[in-house]
Image 1 (cartoon, rainbow, N blue to C red):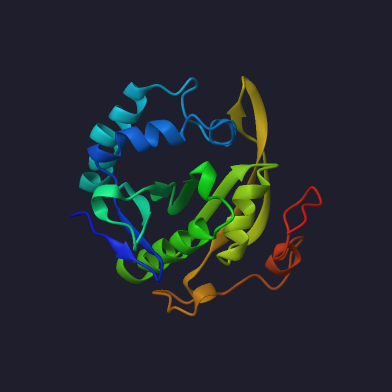
Image 2: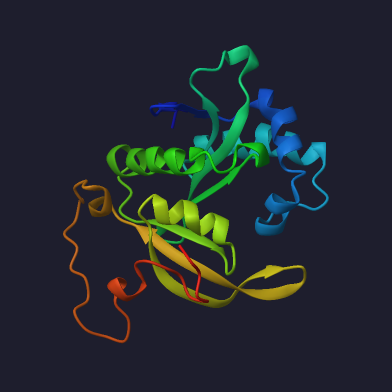
Length: 211
């Protein structure tokens, strides 16, 4: 599809482009971003150039990934500073969401605001019926954003990802159109019995995380 931009009260979400190379390269030097994502380590300028020049346009062209740079709306475009990056991507039979926040802009609610805008666009304009959040177990910062945006924690996928040459558990949660008061293209009939229910995992993930 043709790239689009989205706006919120404070933010502009625009498609990443080659002009973001310096900002993406600088942001991805942050040890926290490298710790909790699958970025190459060390993260070099060529990685940012490949991401912006190849992966981002391919995702829009193939309708497989939509990546957005997040900036403050009150910033002049020529001097606008990247505050976060958000994306949705095809994940098996559903769609996944990903994001990171530039270190100096954490704690300002930008990621949550951007995630909500992207989720609403996904449901209303792209026909997404389930938006899935995944993160390595223990990534409390990522869960804090997802939780504030309305995602429901669904459980743990054991040994579902690799990190530092070891298998790690993955937290998984999801957001549905109805969670945001939006209509669903198909009726949803949640399970009424079974070992687990969504209500039992709604507030906090396993491992006694404080939300």
